[in-house]
Image (cartoon, rainbow over all chains, first blue to last red; front, side, top):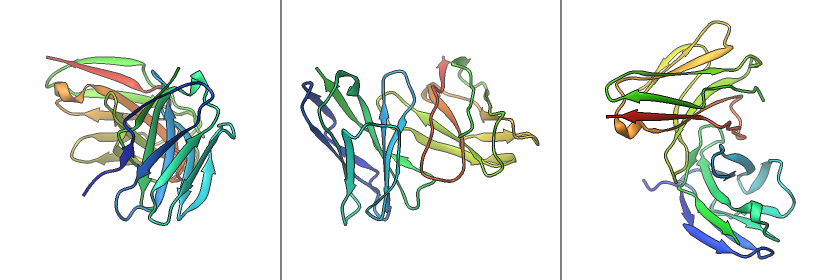
Length: 111
Length: 109
């Protein structure tokens, strides 16, 4: 079975731009979560979606938004990028929400 | 969410057993203890989860004393490929994983 896939692998954006990151969960998993990992720190929870509904949101500004599609894939959008948004963005899927399976991440660099 | 404290780093040699202790004095009744492993430029990987006493799987053991205020992840006979960051998480079985800084384990030949 394929694991969680994310695209793109790497991305370079300029301050003020907008970015969309994509995630495809493991087949059969209905829950997708997004995490931000800044270099040297552990991942920080951004969002979880379950059955296309937002089930939780972490302490991130409204510039961050996400959605889940009928096929359970998900997009994370970040508007008005700041230098501090540079990080590894991780997507995790789960059949229910507890044990989570992480993808390889998207490395976002904001210049 | 219960706060966790674990060592910043640990060094070991191939073939040795590595034990990482995590303190979680404010663990709640409904909380479970979960450990994840992360290699550079990869997402975290679930290792083991437990509530009390001892849990063992094919890669690790988790020891939890009766008061549940700490737990110890035990990695038997480590190899170079076990060099990674190990995270201790405490919480109920919900979706919002709360990661700390983790323990960087370095295995040397």
